[in-house]
Length: 233
Image (cartoon, rainbow, N blue to C red):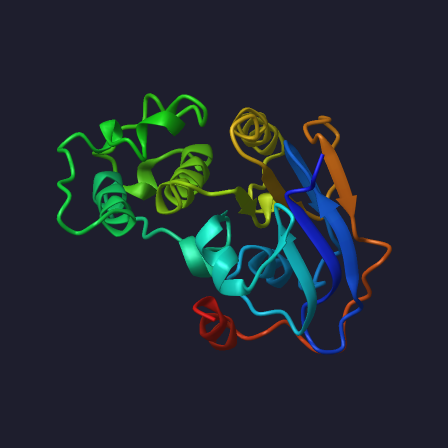
């Protein structure tokens, strides 16, 4: 079966070692070293950062960052999808729905019934989501689930979902709960999860272990400003 991502001689930043790996269907755990530029790698896979060199094929076709930007959903990178804790959940969902559809389409009062939202609620265990609550009043796991939901709403026809830094969920128990959800989600579209940890719960269908092939570059992680410049590359 043809891989979803075929990464060949990828140099994310000048001075980095080239990476070659494939990512297929299901849930793939991308294991990286700490402080190794893994967030930038995830941004590159999702078309939010322009690589220095190499190629990334999506479903067999070499792609530009702009092409991947349109076809790959992304969640978990705070600078891109961080949520204001004082804003109510309904408002955030309405705003994301508005951006995901033509301006003349109406948004239903019940945002959870929107066709870009409703199919994912059961998969992500969000059927009981109270959209009247502020984001800060949601549980830790529901806040992360909401970020994944927003990523899927923004790319209704996504070919894949890339999730950066699952380890930001500090509790091992809650992290396992979220990975259970992502296993279910991966039955609907390929999911790539970035982590510095192994897979003790055997959630992943495949593991791409880059810990022994990537040396931390002397070049530092790009600044927040430089990353923002790359988002629309």
